Length: 485
Image (cartoon, rainbow, N blue to C red; front, side, top):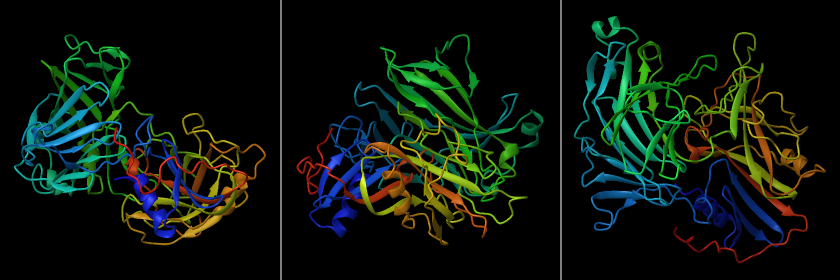
């Protein structure tokens, strides 16, 4: 996935020869005519931190000598990853390596047996890692039947992290815990890995160095960090999540399972524990994701909240934008995201590009607008969606069945123009864009969020004519490949 290249390709398709005139961490700007610009501004980073190198998360062929024994690599992001140690089989042991490109420190991951367990630490196997090969598609390595029929596993190189997904097709794929597991109290599904870390990496939990001798094993939901010898945070465990396929806005589609950590020699055994009480009522397929991130800001630039002001979240894997006609018994949801916008002047066109999280939540029936402020706060500083003041200009976007590919919204240029026309607006400020579920027709809509898949998070496109903007034309020509890191 190369979001900057996608923006360049879209621009060239309509305006052959347009020049890239500005790049920032999350933006790319083209001049398509004198004084007229196309700006693509993303929630997710599209350039490697501190450079103009385009992030490209495709798994490419590794060098047979320099990268041995790995068969595939991804080295154009803030982190590097290597996969498939001479074979594509899921049961090949340490199948992925995660590298900090600045320090050279690394982690390697090895999947272990999928199990049921309980408060007594009794165990019943669900499935062992299988000898199945990976299907490689751009940024995805997918092992179908990784733990058995209906139990797939995916390693996906997102723009900010390496996503690990266990995908459970149905309740029959995992069965029911045996009675002795249930009788042992609080039965859970246990997804586990061995993480082998390089020698100069320490584990910090909740802001303190982990005392592995006196507190081992440790069950926690506190922040977990990997730090180098200089106490710099290299990676951290984002909260694990398990999400089902329900589209009912009043049903919790996602839970945050507990981690359990156990240290042995230089290895870290990590368990993600998903309660059976949730799994037995979940709507399948179910996805379980224990994610390790580089030290990158959390996804506080998108959020949702229901129309009453309840159920705020800036960490869900989707942005809920559900429309509903029955406000008394069900809820409408208002979704929003924030991006930096290096632009001002006359807006010719503006739209949002989103990817629906599933085909059961791909029917937008929303009002599009912007927050009527000079520069919008993120959703950590101001944890609110419904009470933020909307622009007077609002655009209705109603359609059905957009699928899970990239889809452009209706044009809401008047809302963006209203922000540009504010007396305190300055190019480089932040805009919050709203997707408010309407009350006339009930439709389920849930775009993918930054916390779900950062590269699929919303993008704002603005076509504008600048007001007295000076342009430097030769920063990077649109026909050149950006320099490698």
